[in-house]
Amino acid sequence: MSDSVLAALLAALGMVAASEPQSVTVHADGRLAPDEPVTGVLYPGSFNPLHDGHRALAAAAGEIAAEPVTCELAVVNVDKPPLALDDVQRRIAPFRRERLALVLTTAPTFIEKARLFPGVTFAIGWDTAVRLVHARYYGGSEHAMLAALAEMRALGCHFIVGGRVVDGRFRRLDEAEIPADLADLFTEIPESRFRVDLSSTELR
Image (cartoon, rainbow, N blue to C red; front, side, top):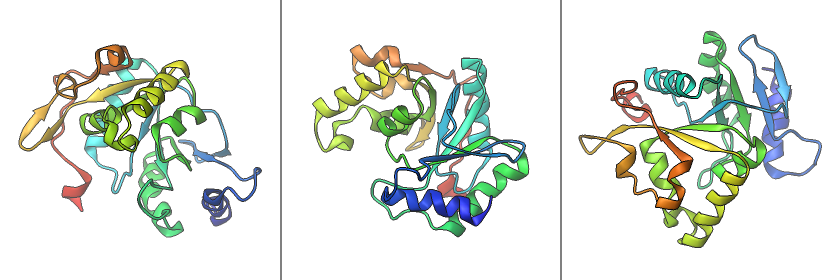
């Protein structure tokens, strides 16, 4: 990926011009496509670094949804500075080597991702599912949480959730305390189809 393409994407974080891209898709064959629609399964992550747990969750989610999987790296974070150009290049390098589809975006939150790519099925881990339904991550407002998830439902988005070991125990979807009226938005990946007790933090 050329520095100019990535620089344009990073510049878009400031939203200084409507013509700047909000996403750049890096296809498995190396093609670059600014603001290209993404369908199927979208797997957001920091991928710092990409590891076997990511690969296994992507594979399981793709099998359950019977759809292709595109990973997503947001170059802007809700509570951290934007990723530097060299950091973005370092994180995407494994995807290019392995010819895995990746989209870079300026969408740090799930509601922004859903608006950018309506109709996708998000592949997420248990810990992310917990945050999705917790008012704490919506400024402490349960109303804001419910409104965001209702909008994601209206946009045709769903979530496939992989379990994760937390505090020494494998946590499943039923431990995420999903409100009953939101349960239809979430599908669990059975432990028999996905369990990798590995994290990027441990690898770093």
